[in-house]
Amino acid sequence: MTAEGIIFDFNGTMLYDGELQEESWKIFLESKIGRSVSDEEFQEYVHGRNVEITLSYFLKSDLTKEQIKELEEKKEVVYRQLCMEQPEQFRLAAGLPEFLDALRQREIPFTIATASGLNNVKFFFQHLGLGRWFNIDNVVYNDGTIPGKPEPEIYLKAAKVMGVHMEKCIVFEDARAGIEAAKRAGAAKIIGVSSMLDEDMLLTLPGVTAVIRDYRNIMNLLPFCTSL
Image (cartoon, rainbow, N blue to C red):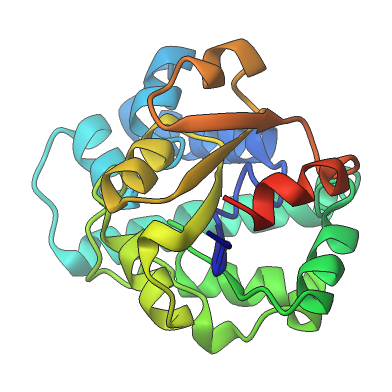
């Protein structure tokens, strides 16, 4: 059985921006709630989650879609500013461009399924050159209509965009919620990316079949990736 599609989460999987995300969320949330955000809270309620879940937990109130959108954009302005101020962290994961080139050469479809909103997706395309490999119209992002991870819909939609059955897709993920979403969606294989969580932790999560630190040695996994 040959893999017919590959789906990448983005933040923490293609872009190791965990520190930038944490810093921007903590700056924003602490200005709203008047206290520090713990590492445990960040992993559980921020990393890999849709913004609705994050804001509902920390602000302890029901928010309208308009309020959520406004608050999210304020936080993302902080995040994008940090990205531009710290270019050493704002770059694609090591070896990823070469891996994407290899996938294109093998004519294996691939796309992105991200909890980021459209403004951030456009920002990433502009500053990270994603148009070299991806059509922005085929990127599945948080448009306010898709349930957040760990719900499986975002991955099911990404597979549909590629025209590939989910059970024939490989997912690259770094977060607990995203890994659970991929598993619930029925992904054939889930490869954990240890940008934030360590390898041993990722391997204990149900559904994870392999773990990588980055993409520099991913060619050694290509038989695994293309022959399930």
